[in-house]
Length: 237
Image (cartoon, rainbow, N blue to C red; front, side, top):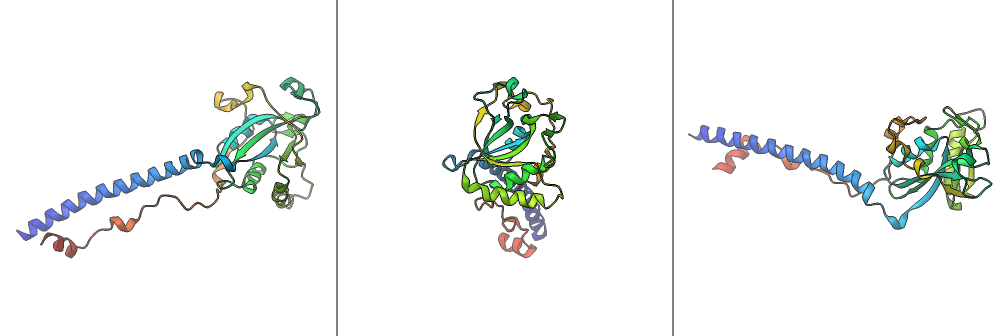
């Protein structure tokens, strides 16, 4: 009789343990999802900073940076040219603007250093006025800042990148002089046209390192540890 009771207890425990593990796994999967949502939704709007990247055709560059956790918004436009409110046709005519993206980000989630490092992973820093299949002054590369205190952080990344080459890198590091939004059809271009032209390799997104966070949900495996046979008997008798 006791043996039957113990076997029944073990069976009940097995069902409970399996359900508990499934619950734990579901909770863990949910925590990953919630953490991603937290990075997107819980961005501190009072803490947003701005940086501008020119990396060739802005369609792919915009999409790339929009996928980085901690980035609030990315828009495409024309920067550091000689005329006001240029059109795409004007820019293609060589008036000096660079196809540029404006990145708004929360530095408590993603740092300027990491963003700049990721920028170098998707550009050829030695190429002059050319990225991918695109040629022209509008396709030059550059990082343009609006906060003077950001320059030293960016410069450190530039210096580290320069160490990889004998030739001087061709990426500009300058304060932003002007920026004009590109036409609406350029905004979120690859989201609207998933099979559209893109010279960017998105593989390096897997290497993005966000800033350390202390509020991630964790599941304690000890909470679901298997009790001993003696422990089960103590519970029954």
